[in-house]
Image (cartoon, rainbow, N blue to C red; front, side, top):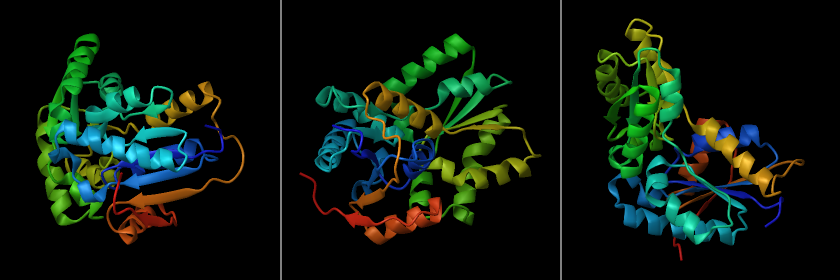
Length: 272
């Protein structure tokens, strides 16, 4: 591996682009490969065993294209597969997405933190153990809210349609009613509906609610690992390339619509 090699980033769909946005901003010289596993979305409906096998197949694909590091830009896949990936590739810098509980606990004033995430993430043993640990150490109460269908709306590009807003209202209102003053966006898809969330908060009297997006922390951890391994690319223009098991046009459109980036997206029809 060498500094000129690219970084591989993957998610079930386009949610991981919210993480790529932070990585591209903090590490502007790094070449990036983004893999959207659209044919297997949504990940929340798959077992941990299936997701672990899928993550290994995607890792092989990205490493085959020279990736010097991997970012699991999906909360559900991190819970299911990051340990397996690290066991298979112990020398490779691998960063997963943490659910944002610690920054949520640090930010709250009321002591009540709402967590918006997929039901699969919220049911994971690793997540629940982390919740109990941070709740005990910070004295915070975590109000868990599963959000079925919300990641699908983002994948469809429906960020502020009536259906998406109705979903968000149903997820957020109970958390506000219980006194949450901090909302953790516990899925990488959810930062793309921040604007719609802000409008809902405004309708509820302009509530002063802190939103926690963990993409920034992922980018900082990636930078630390690359620096420690001597793999940081410090100069030169960067390239961003997309791969998807779905439609290339859809992924290229997501890059344009969500990030304002013109990116070539290649379709992948089989993983070894």
